[in-house]
Length: 342
Ligand code: KG4
Ligand code: ZN
Image 1 (spheres, rainbow, N blue to C red):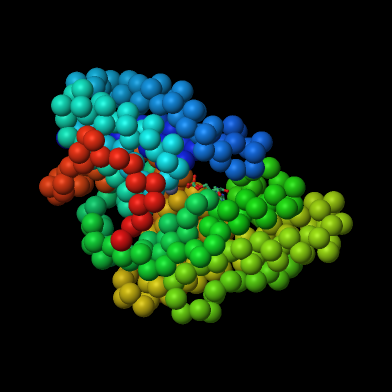
Image 2 (cartoon, protein in one colour; image 1 turned 135 degrees about the vertical axis):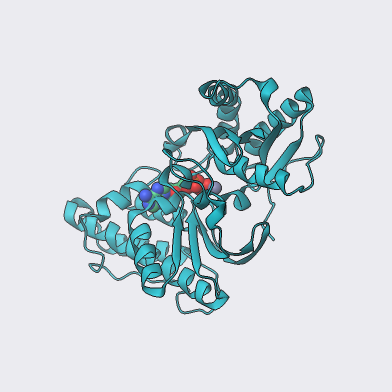
């Protein structure tokens, strides 16, 4: 079965061709530079950029593997959650392609697709490894979301908790902005933190000791704001900025890792997975690996190329759903910007 999948839920325009559990191509056009001067994603600009890039991106994904639209067996797209006017572009385009080709169409929940990215190999071996699929606790952590999901089996999952205010990626980006770093600051904090002392400054670990699976990062951001207000001279010292980055990162990572491990222990699963843009963070990857090793959990981290938003995960999930005879999505169905995982 050969599928074309489109993803336009936020600021990445992506198209992928997937066949029999294998990602044949996955083209991603990121809008990061466009939104950088505004310090965050501007929905109207994102939609216009998707409009401009979607066709070339889809054509590139097909051309890369020499597949013509007529050879497609199905079409998929992200239906939600996401920015309404951004979702509309990819979803409606995919419905139109499915209509013209008279092929099945399937609308995909973006978060459910994130649950699949850890099971897709890296760029060199982009095959979905469902042979090793196990019940797991999945951390989805990005600029828009921070959530823990219990995946009992494929298509059977339950959201255990999420952020009650800012997402972890937002916390990286906003604290970075306070330090004068450009958007998105997450990857820059990651790089600077390598030279810094994570114990230099003590920032709060919000909700760490609460027994629920929720997260909160706005208090940490406020604490960094006051700290910088009271010690503005630190920003002129490269080493101190590195220490600040390492200390902020350590606080975010400790909360993410400890709460993930606690949820995995409580759920009785033996496997932990993680995906979403913040999963690119080297401190988080290392800390998850250490904690999982210590507690005897198998760890599946999405390949860095598949942590951020991509159509490969949409296509892989859509194909699994089609193979499991899940219902198709009608061609007159609408986007679901607020579609939460059950
Ligand atoms: O999944 P994603 O591309 O988009 C959505 O938010 O939907 O994630 C982007 C987020 C941004 O907040 C960015 O700063 C963060 O992921 N991020 C990182 C790293 N790479 C990306 N945060 C910390 N360390 C990184 N290496
Ligand atoms: Zn995402």
